Amino acid sequence: MRINKKLVSLLAGLALASPVFADTTITNVPSWDGGNAIVGWSTRSLTTFGQTFTTGASDTVLNSFTFYLTGYYHAGSSDDISYKAYVAEWDGSKMSNVVWSSGISSTGVGNSWDFQKIDTNTGKLELKTNTQYVAFFSTSGLYSPSDREIVNTFGLTEDTISGGSAVMSNNHGYFSQLSLNSWTVLRGDDLAFSATLTAAVPEPETYVMLLAGLGLIGVAARRRRA
Image 1 (tube, rainbow, N blue to C red):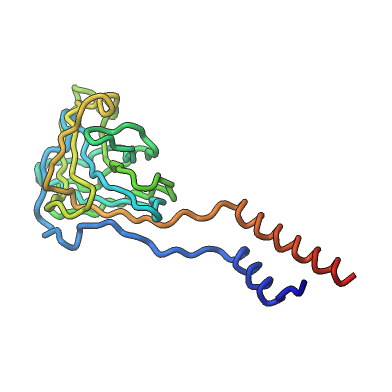
Image 2: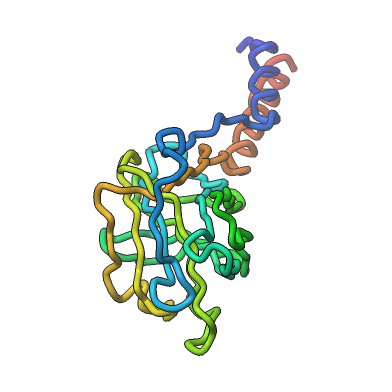
């Protein structure tokens, strides 16, 4: 059996090379007018706002997502809201399983009238294929009823994200309610939103098996020459 040395070298190079994948971006920001908004995300009642989206068949690793917020509802007196970011599976009416959560963050919008871009890095979160998820911000568990209410505002646009909608929950800060009770789904609207996804990187075992196969080819070739 003759072994094509160039082919073996090429396969070995492919096995050792770091894979490079192009990002897929789910976004409606280019079609958002930069001013349309939904008021009401607060530290008391409407404590949860988010956006649903649906993964495809290949690009399922969520690297980050972005919302746009302002504090202009209470311009001159508003504060930043402390919140946690989440990604959860969506069953059509509510979240069903949290797959990622952040530490406590602050919106940083203060009393600005200008929308601020709020990026959330999810650190290569691997999601399921062809599955609906919800990315959301929630103040649940971070404030007490006696605290002064703070309200921030999300950018809002017409529904342009396939398989997604803007959603919110009047869960009054009780996180457990988010998986028990249906959320309000704003059909026909999306939050101003973007998410960056890439394809899953092959498991290291895939490369090990390929290199092992190349090794066996080399052994067989040496035996034939012996």
